[in-house]
Length: 596
Image (cartoon, rainbow, N blue to C red; front, side, top):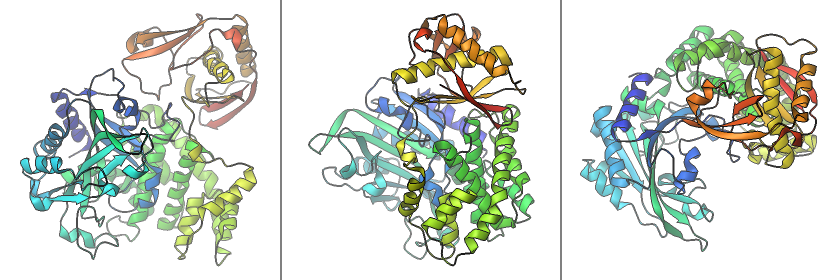
């Protein structure tokens, strides 16, 4: 089965069950300060799981792009990736356990025709004040699941909340037990994967590689109260998620997700460019890392992320450089052609899906990848020579590799583990902090909608980006389009695409136009319009963002109109003057403006 066929089946199944398609969130979230990337389908739905009414109703489904940095060390086996697609469905206070388990069983056994004898399920065994989930057991048995195919596990496996098990949930956190479905590839598989569990008694959660989790139905029915106990929610929800790649592997009865059609052409390119057979190579794990990391990198790039040393940009750089290290390990070389070819393969696989348009994006992807890989290749050899000078590398040397040769800490940690020891990330960070005078870690969160906060100065700069966007089009032409923005109380940053090199006076003209519009004290008004109508009147928008059927459009007088969630000042006179302080090229046809 192909990924296109699986998508079609998923869509038609839930449409028949009267579910509405909720637009998937962008991979890079614009209004969630708690994370750098979307990591699950339910993440954007938290307000609605807490009781807020969703405009599409109570029964929803979609397929969501996800990235989980916490899984980066797991990549290399047959089933783990950092980047994946989550097939999800939700009930917001509508149906509950019986309908959900019945429907997901129907999808697996009737739509996908998975053999029932190969499916195992797990349920919550109970903990503290929450009893074992015998209700789900009863439902599974009613559906025909045999006793020996039902397994009980504790809160480390069969409980969900954003904070973990019940005892770690803060006041106000929602959560509940879950029930997972596993596909069994057979007893012989566990000898194929290098797992510490392979010689022990096998069970669905032993992680030996024999069983593959293909779906998880979470029953969000509890909320942590002020006294520390769990209370029943008035609105009981269902949150289901199943990895598209894993489900494809189960349907094709091959435990290696890297042999599905969302990876196979990528693996083939790696084989051709390195001259090494995937199936016969001892470097299979490294080839999987290259495939996963390059796919994730492509989706980050088309989402507007540029390699840098902070936030999303650092994660992109980390992935590309890890892929480079693994490629050097496999082939002894760093062929930039390989990475560009893999980038094109990813665009080909997903062309027309998830915001991918190969024709429009292949130049951008190739440019960002080649620039980063060429930059890293210049220092890779010197960095490895520096690394090999030392019999044992400590955290200070690791920081020197980061500072002087561009080695992310995690890359050095790969390298030292091959020598049989590890580094302390805390001590590494101490060196980093002393150099920077402050910690700039991902845990500080991301900007809401590109905004650091909603302070007066931030709102002024936010409104100014609308003027900037239109002024750039006035001066440089209609090819200008927004590629991203980042706004703090100290400055605004605006990334854009343009099809020609601006002349030296272009940005002086842009600055002049902006300040003229500020001086005119144009009113700033918001209207909610159908998306098609907004597009028809020529409202600008960030093309990587995904919008619903109705959108907010902010009008700055009769000069600018743009899709935006807000907020803004009431008239441009509040902004004060704007000065463009820096302009630089960040990629092929990509530029970045700083202003304040």
